[in-house]
Length: 380
Image (cartoon, rainbow, N blue to C red; front, side):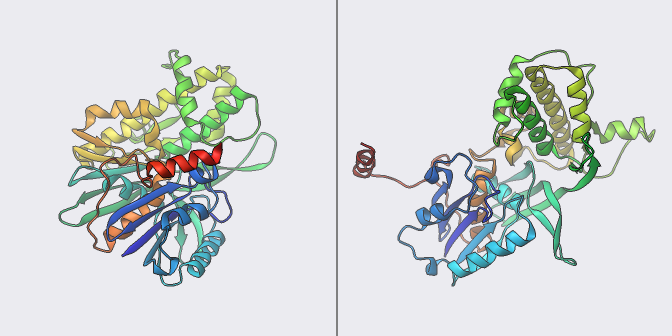
């Protein structure tokens, strides 16, 4: 069976678009669109990636197109993309695969573990359809589950969804802020954006700067003990507000304050960008360690797989090691692994035996010395 996984957007508001090809359960090739367009974090529809992956295979010969929409796509764009894929792959079954299922599959099926648990944390997953009014009102935030490859078990559960809150901005205009529990990716991404604009003296968003802010935090160390804590833990809330000794409502909760309140604190504190970065990184680490430590008690096994953009934060990742026996994070835990996850998920659900290359950091095509030489000569 020939299966192609696709991540991309027809309206170009996406990022990290690309494609992956599996044939009879064997991984053939994966590539991100930015490798071919030379535009970093390319989010346009992956026309070139699809062509690259297919090679001599005709679109008519594809059995399944596993498509994961962009998290920012609205319902009309999703339908438009589906119609386009239908017209291109006329003989294929079209699968719409959840963003978080793709993240989970990308780490589970590249892990050396036969069984274990998984957790996905990112900025936002796919919109969740309201089947009554045919609109998208909520988005995935984090997901958890258990797997056993020999037994064919892959239990996937969404922990949290998020909605949008309207509020009045300082300029008097209505603005929106994400609200919901355990929205780690949104918290880190949003504050990173604010810090970077301050540091660079710009007034527009630049994508993919979270790693820079994580690095910047090393230059702003100070005692944050008495600083405003930008979140509330469920255990603290139950004791301080409800006067309860134990809060048994299932999954642990970290409720972040609204973005405007956090930014107001940073503005009035007169922190340098370096200090703001340190403030963000330390509170992020404390929040995520609390959350995952609580999950470890009842939900996460000693062998665990992580995926989602939050697990690109190496500083936080190192603090998780004492909690588990073995941790697996693929080289592409962010959205560049979504098209791979879509394809491997469709292969798994089609009852195919999954075969993955030994070096999962190298998933492109193999080139002969002659092909490399020819490519170099084209540049001369």
